[in-house]
Length: 217
Image (tube, rainbow, N blue to C red; front, side, top):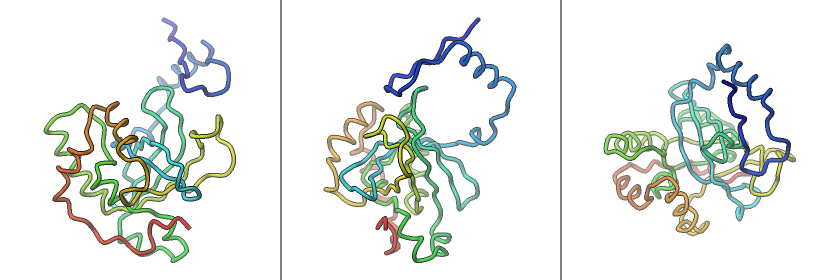
């Protein structure tokens, strides 16, 4: 049976995939080994803000894998469906590695404390008490990590990945954007509630954030 051609619903320029391209993709998936992407073990959702323009932000889906206990790497997409656009990358490291960075390097990295405690950072899934416990354990780890993120495709503005990569940061406190509207809309799509996340995470210990982090210089 000839597989149906994938359809892009996000308005990306270009012709729809031909049957030939779809068949070639399907064949490749049967005979090639995609080992690096098979290591992805977590899907996280949050919002990134442009370091160069703190009024612009993008909802981002992170698909992450561990390289070591101290280093994670994430592929970033603008959605969760088959037409999701790959928009960037994020690396996450533990505080002990962050401390080894130069004073010029450290400002490029952001903390995750506000994302975790506010309920902005979530791991979308079918809700269950078992999963809620697993998500909380993951948040206990992520809250200590520092992330370095670049978006290659400014999907809030450009139809194609134009220009130079953009350094992205995280939100670090209330009042930096319309949290209720944007996080609320995200929650409605995933069937979750950031307020419940806040309450469940009240007892997660807050680490001391290095003073060089979050500046995005």
